[in-house]
View 1 (tube, rainbow, N blue to C red):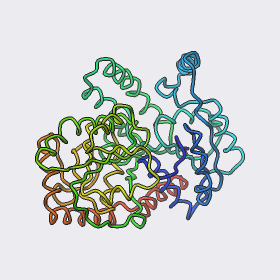
View 2: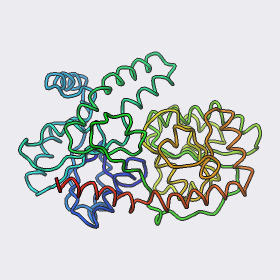
View 3: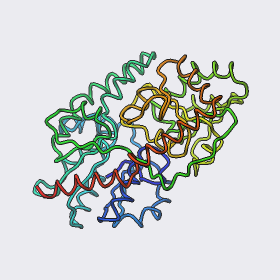
View 4: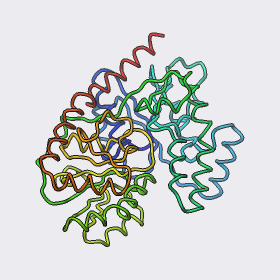
Length: 392
């Protein structure tokens, strides 16, 4: 069960979900149920059919203020976590039970903790095994956003979200037979009594060519640009880092690539040195034009598929410690790590101006993702979890 159709694989969540489906479908039947946010997602169903035994979906219809209040109250009365009500639809619950009635399914894997409450609607005597996959631990993400935000209204909003998420994620995880996290660091954020496996994010290395080095003082940031941690990251970079890079290196350029850019992101394109692309059909041409991938994240959880993607494509990465958290990378071998604006400026300029260093880091990083993070290996780990669950 996913939020959003896992295609095209052009964002972290979609890359994760699509590649697991693609690899697991070689050995097992996959039944996909998705809660869709956008009508245009339906056009991609045909690309998924070769990997899925069946595909079902429900649209997350926009709610009026009255409907929002009603659903929030319903969540309280039914003891469903109020933080999950924006993602809970009775039609989706009905569709889930319809799929379970019509097919013999051994395991249900729910992607993202905010979809966890759908577990409550499954017929109690159903013997299927239940897995909850944490793409990130939500309460930790909100906690970092509280620290970063100077806007009092937004700070209060994240404080409320953090309090709402704090207890129910762990509580709902106990209703599942097994949980998945993407790093050992995320594992430590959940109760030790839970049955948890670390299934890292990965990359389909065969689909990513090792690109030639560019020579144009161009950087690239990739991510869903409606996602708060990404918005914070690029605004931070453009305000506190990019101007200093421009002072020291003429004609530097920045690509901001990702769908649903917020107005404050679009405004950055008023500078001739910043290109905001919005959604793109293929991300590789933008990497081809870039020398360095930047990941100035200060909030968020999980592990960064954008880093694995850049590494697979042969682009040297500069990231904060948080940005590469959970990845087995070594500073100055696979990546450059920078946690202050000054460090970020220094390491970015170092990579832009030193071709030998840039190429060395790019080659080391590509080797790392091939050995440790290829989706074929990650999927085998998940299938081992599945097989062990079915034995007990």
